[in-house]
Length: 417
Image (cartoon, rainbow, N blue to C red; front, side, top):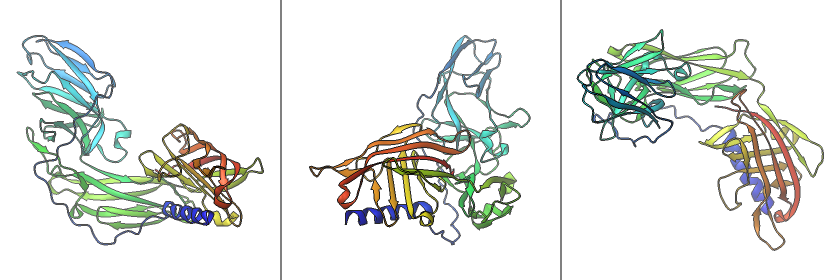
């Protein structure tokens, strides 16, 4: 009985992993704006501060990571002051990179000082330079988008003038995200265009606008979705679903674009590229030192920020199923308590045969987690494949999981994000 229940439970989890939820075809309603902005937590220290004493002659100070430069012109202060730039976590609703705490907060400038952010190609993965903005967090916790921002495309700089210090951040005022940058054949990706409340009107120098929560771009601003390449694209307002073709296309990656019209601010085009691959990796398993059985894998999926799940692509073909789930990154992750719902877990089912899991019942009747665990050797930062091994020692199987055997595995599975 326990074996049948375990198989049914696994099948339910497996189905949830491999099939996306049905999409609502109704066009989403346009958002209702909060004109006062939304307060966020204050950022926490996230790096080494840099300090410099600058006097009436003026000077400049750059953060340790080179991302933000502070320029104080001659005559801005009447006497020598110690200035500092402290990297902090970025709580801006549309954050790009870290935020920076500029101190001292109580200094009075006779002339405006300049804050200069340097952006990278990576910062533009979801947006374009024209969407970048600068904001500071006020004493109520609300981020105030600045209207005096200038963008230097040639040198990848975004600048703003200010007469006060606070916590400052670079942000992307609108951007396009995709749930996957690489898909298997017949795989799907969800796309959506985001912004935040009240910052899409053109700002004039000296003006500032409080930033609200992150929301989907209004449907009235979405003019057209387009697909360049094979597959199928189903738009739905600020969202779209892309399905990859059944075979790897000759032109790869495909390009998905969305045209935006923000009225007085202008018209823009955002583009996402998705690579279609027939190789999503493989999972190998053996029991009690026997022969290795290899099966193609489905792309790894995220169940949460650090909760990753992997499975074989078609258990029916060879009559077995495997599910691997781990919490964390590179390193060894022990199996979860069998009474817990979430955690590191491995399940291996052979159709018409045994059902092995990472828990067993001891002779005294205690239900315990197996020894061993899932070892991750690479999170795919270099090639997009999560690699590692697992060891269930012992794995429970048979009547009420009272029988045990050693189950080993190794895997190379493509990330879907």
